[in-house]
Length: 240
Image (cartoon, rainbow, N blue to C red; front, side, top):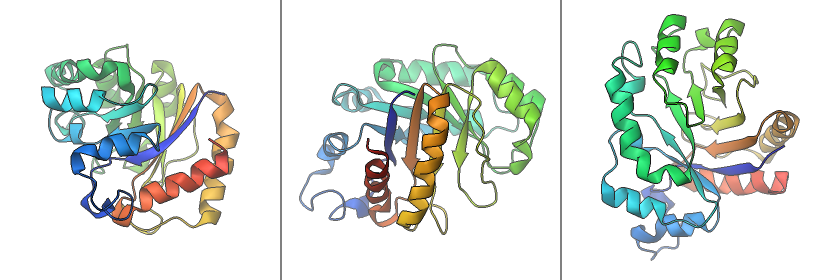
């Protein structure tokens, strides 16, 4: 069983000031503060725009061992048939190349209107360069079938386990990492998980982690800084 790394989906939320970040801490110092407390974070901004050079320099200034999961651009994942054309993937990979020493995973989050289409998925996976670990998150439950799991296993792609209502992922391992996104106990991106629920997730992670090289858990319930609070509790429960 490899490392278990727990963090949050992003770190630049304004309402974290005074709740997670000290009230007077400048926002430019938030990443350094975060990285002293957690070993990983999801880099969400890459979903909406390609990073600029000054972004990459700032993001690379993290402690040794701190790693990112970067999200693929919506220009790639939210097309009618993701992966067409290949140029979008190539441009994205070139853009994040300077950050590669700190990149643990690349996450493809598909939209809820993207229903099962094995050919489209196969085409998309074929556009991905081989030197990264990839994770896919489905938002339509039609994808949760054995044929899709087999395709992911064949390509060494990890299925994201998540708890978003309407498309909750089954506890299936398909790739080299166990990847969990916790979007919120009541509604998306809101609410704080009860300790009993976090204990359930801790038990699940203990059961599945021996089957993978590494485990990543990200809390996406960013409202009122519940995400870092819950992340701390889960780390304590798992002793990491």
